[in-house]
Length: 292
Image (cartoon, rainbow, N blue to C red; front, side, top):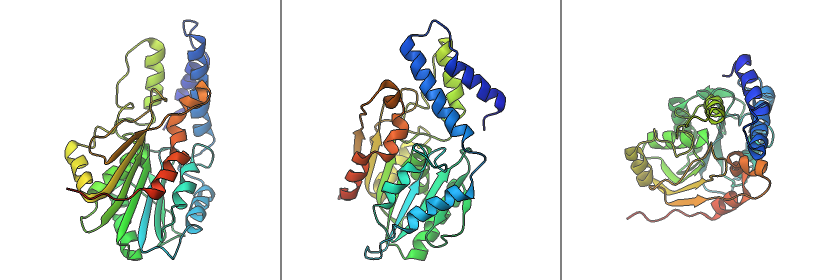
């Protein structure tokens, strides 16, 4: 959680940088500063329930009784509880995949509190973290009689998808695991953005925790995910140069997504990839592969 003092510092760094900065760097700083300020100021606390109820409405409208029992699990990243172009935007194309049961989860301001709904209890808003969400996925699958599960996560939600999928019992078949620019919620918390501003504008080297796949998902965990999933698709970008993931060798499919537009638009690629129609169109036709 950012204090008012931290927000003021962030605003000063993003809008009143030293004259040694190049003009293009100044524009980039202004753009990301506006994005962060919009995210923090427009979303108070862990969630207005009206926003989250809207999320539940999206999911309930998408249930398709013609599809065999299949649980869809969607984990949004930090700030995804809030509506808007960089909040709940990934949930609409996710629900268009059409499953009979669902669990949808989003983060508000706090990286260790995720809010979620399930099709088993569509009016019950709950909160938890890795262990609670793992149990919730198991319960939702049992309640729906789901023989197969699709798990999708973006950013911190991609990290959460990997953590939950690793902990699920082998009896639950994960047909698809989809990580979209996954970032560790432990190694790269929201407060790291402030540190990045300070280091970048002070000429100090930054670290790599926000510019790589989650390093706290160990090689053993990744091998386990490879074994227990029908297909693991990993999508990532590198145009948000201080916040991006990368290739994961154990994934079945790795795809780097490129973005066009202005410098500021490309700079927001970490957010844009969550709702990129190229990703969601491909997911509709993605099929599990035979494991040797």
